[in-house]
Image 1 (cartoon, rainbow, N blue to C red):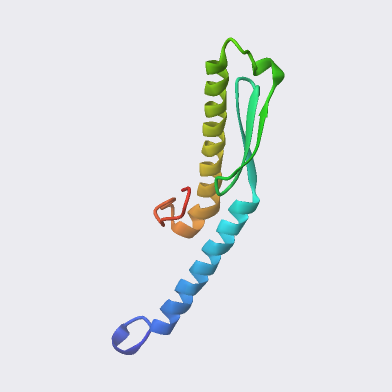
Image 2 (cartoon, rainbow, N blue to C red):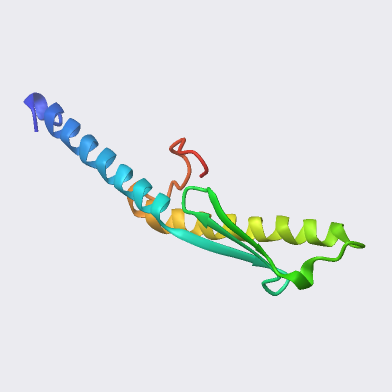
Length: 111
């Protein structure tokens, strides 16, 4: 404690710097982790990094019907949404302990 029972400013700054470093490390961990989303019994799968970049899209030949492109489009969207859900869960488990359960309230892109 500083004078008058106030918290020591240098201790607060050091604590803030530690928190910033921990958040940066967690963001790097998210960016390096991949999750997979799928739809249609895995007819379409999407691989996405923890920071939201799509790294792979796989479409099974059985999903390709020239007479029904709309279903394939819906499957792709569903697989991307499933991957995004997995990213959100990963972000919550990775960032949650650091943010006190605030989740995406830090202005981090993609959360």
